[in-house]
Length: 507
Image (cartoon, rainbow, N blue to C red):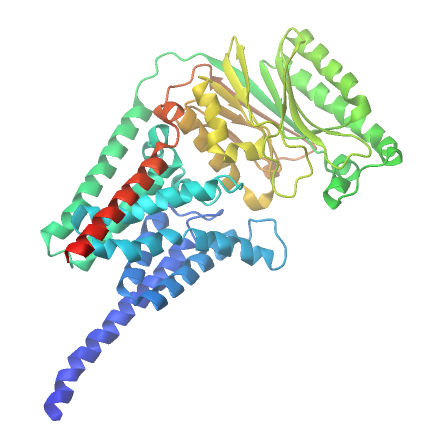
């Protein structure tokens, strides 16, 4: 009896230490997951979170492992998104929690499939499932919010991978590292045949960083630039009396429109006056922030004529971003009217993806494109830039500059502008993002910041932001190949399922 008790003590100690490691991994995964999305993104946390969560799920019994793992990832998303998303009440927990559960699906697939495989094949299950699942989630209508690649903002050499693969290529790489690290961890780093995939993964990451660094550092020679000026006027008082009632399902009445008319016309005069001043200071492209001009339908034609006259007199391209409200109609026209230096209207674009809760008409999903002496220019509005598939139209068209008038708020600043900047890496086109109540940002085709202005840091009712952008973009494979990585990932996953079934049958 005494001998049995002596033998049991090491067993119990091992069990306790194993449990301590497992639940330590679970806690670490939750903490790291809360710093991979939202405004508080820590790049290294995005690499560590899946390492710890995979370790916990793989080392635990299926039901408690999957249940607690899903709870940890959902909780991490709730913590990260809680101060960001505009939902109220239980929706502030339910929506990010559901997003976290959706992103847990790859862990379920890995828990089922990877034990049936060996070596390199076993490490490909999780990254393939993650890349494919992330792409499917991005098709649900909320764009690329939650994509893990955004957590790497600022690492320009690494982000150049997006010029080849898009966001999901970076997702695959982070997921592959997690799977390889776990395989080596499980072997206690003592069995070479189980940790050599980690060395291979490290080699690929090093190659990506080297190639990306060379791409960013490659000499560009003498690059011609064009001065772009953004103008934003404090329009909140006008907004409350025109567009705001539509958010509550109450169309503007004719009497309300007439009462707000003088306010809207004063706003128009102020916008045109400051646009003229920026033109005379040397700007050739002038951009207003999203819906900065609030226009009643009966005044729209006169307002556009005034903008055409200004563009012709000053010899500039004028990007008139406005929200046109028609009395009696439940939705506004959130649009961008582009006028050339001859005073001709060269495009009228309706926002293709109204933000959740936005009372505006949905556009046709085709970016505006225009050839100018300053390169080929493409444009879309704010939330549209959260949809890589839409913005890739600019890359396929060979755009050199993208115009992205936007309207953010403090809760999604600076995250939302950082998200939009990655579209430049994907397409190779510079981006000018003039933002009302957020971070205005200009980047080149490699994602390098050329200038920024925080709306909240200014004083007075007028915010102007000026940057010089290259008139020539760079070519990217992603513009041609599109989202090939999710398709390849799904094919790899299907092949791994077949291999696993054969292995099970042979056993």
